[in-house]
Length: 325
Image 1 (spheres, helix red, strand yellow):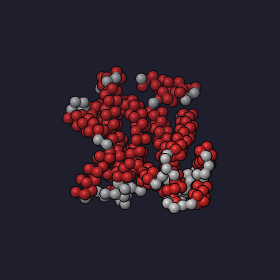
Image 2 (spheres, rainbow, N blue to C red):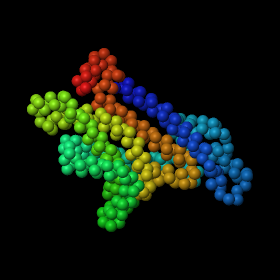
Image 3 (cartoon, helix red, strand yellow):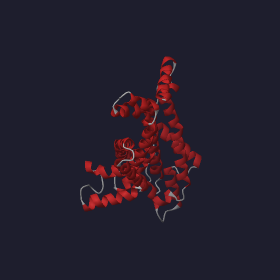
Image 4 (tube, rainbow, N blue to C red):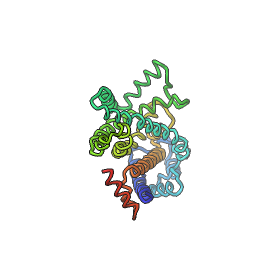
């Protein structure tokens, strides 16, 4: 297991380096002049040259890229904002907790609602509950979050006045952003869990367990659940990046001071250090989430353990994989 975790962490390094290079290149090639934006109209060539040298923009592409990578890797220095002159890392560390809390709570809500709904829909196939959960999942997956969010704001914030309209001043402020961000994941996880559970409960070992007289609850939770979770965890891992990106969009809609609003401000002002730092940090968080999901996948699926075990442990893992199949 340790070898598997180390391998996944090592794979994340070139991914993050690739993201850093791509994002820096895009901002470098983007039309517009940050120096001119900062100085405004009426500047002299001397002032322009001085400001460009101060920001390090008087060098060529490779020199700027090399210097940026060196600062990020060795000192975690993403530069300073062109507009406020505040270090980007300071703002990122302040805002990161807000964005991560929304994304993390969205994941929890997605799992707590999506998996049980999918299991119930599979067990009660062709029942009213099955049709209800399936229809709800299809509707939620068809409507984007930026369409649902204003509707919920009007209903629960303006008309009923049950929930705050913006900010994160109290625990109620998390309800709408988290629910809106998790809605698409709930729809996907419900459908995926239902499909996987239906496939699992039709296997021969489930029929054998029923023939032995085991209770249906024991069959579902002890025998079928583990094999059902293997494809579900895979889907959940691919959805984490979308939940993180959704958290950034939700912050704009609900005026939450997180990475999303910070990134949007950087894009609006052509503040390239903010853009680069925000995207790189988001990519890092997504990579860490993916590693956690991969570890959970290895715990659930004994075939992955078998690839990174040796001796007696490998034989036991192979035997467990054969029994699970």
